[in-house]
Image (cartoon, rainbow, N blue to C red; front, side, top):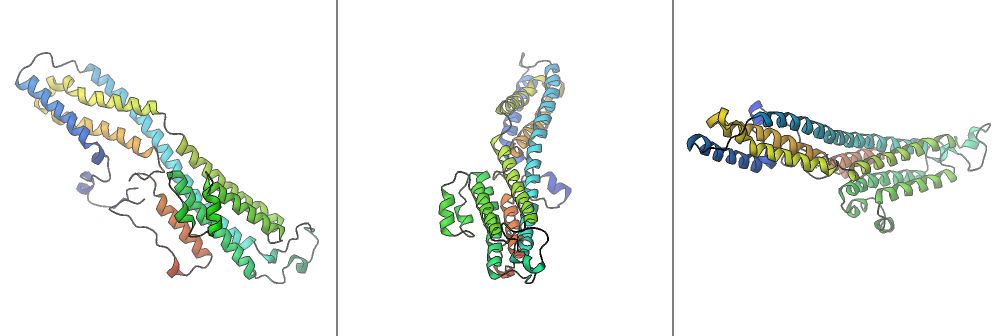
Length: 334
């Protein structure tokens, strides 16, 4: 994602990185060149038959503007939904870790098949409120698996290999086991659920709290499913193809419709209109796939690292051992 940095008004006006001009300038220059040729032939050399009435371009211009507006609104909705989902992933990851640290432990003392009410504090294990080293190890185990899930989800959405990332937090046996899965983040979630079930059978999770932990896992599943829906259901290609065709036809043919009235200013008018139409077309295409690695896509790497740092701090990792959150490179955060 392009990181916004406050700058002067002129700096923003001529910035290539923040807009679509870096991608669309060849098309803009080509349509402008065509308009220069048409202007020379029609105005300077008085060649007949090169001009048409501007009425069709007026009608078509309005139609294209409405069409591009609809397409860009649809694309941005996908982008914003993706950002909302990853914001929810940040919050749910923190919530699950907090729940594991406070709701999982021997001091809850639930016996797998024992009574829930009418028991003493001693029977519930309240005499020793501090979790044992074994419980602490289990809490850390769930937390680092949540970190692995976040990184695996990012790679899953970008169709890249998560092995290097997850191997930092999972034992080699688990990495090898997950490597054979087509959906690694889902496999990690199932593994976390199995481990929490094991903890409940050991009496580390109270029946009242099991539902809260399951709710957090369900929310993670819903977030993953919604992200997969965005990734696997793109904007129908017919919209993209039609918008490309209409914009190209309009921008390259515009000079034939305005040269009689605009004269030598025709190239300047075509340049401005082409910049607007090609830019709107390109912006819609750039943001419709929010999980990629395009400069205007979501910074999943930075979001993943933020979750990783937050969760490691929650389980007491020293500051010197925390990974650094990646900083923007050339104004781009991936």
